[in-house]
Length: 190
Image 1 (cartoon, helix red, strand yellow):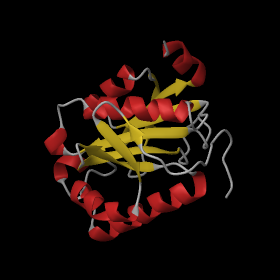
Image 2 (cartoon, rainbow, N blue to C red; image 1 turned 90 degrees about the horizontal axis):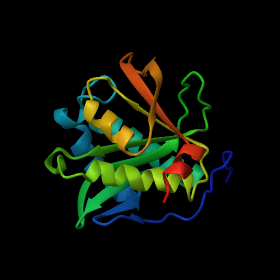
Image 3 (cartoon, rainbow, N blue to C red; image 1 turned 135 degrees about the vertical axis):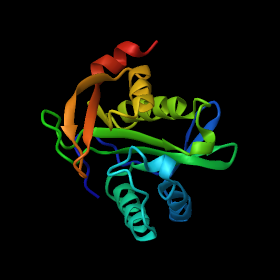
């Protein structure tokens, strides 16, 4: 198994917060992912804004499993008191963002609509941020969101990220990019 610069492909493990378990992606999460990705409310600010088909969901699910195999980190299921509440993601950035190296880690989250407004996204994002810089040894964390999704933008600011610039996503949609560098994360720590 190869490693990307600064990444630790360690054993799959669950991240825990005060309320949540962020479980490593596993085979059994495909139906949960389909439930999320087929919901118009959830997908409004993802890619082209259209719900995913069962086939598209299956492709993404398999890609998540492969990412874990290759890099030792990736998507996670968010569980609130044992119930699936969304998706937490740390991935290699991959898609080029001018000025940000491709092997930077990208952070993201999808919280199920029935769990909105309870602070789960912020709690998830903080745990992911600390795992990226702590366990994974990241030097830089990047995040992208569509301009209409200001709730995600506010969470990025809450976890210490700063605006980096604007670009275009894979479906041609406008995307804002935020970043957090290791030195800035270290300055946030008590």
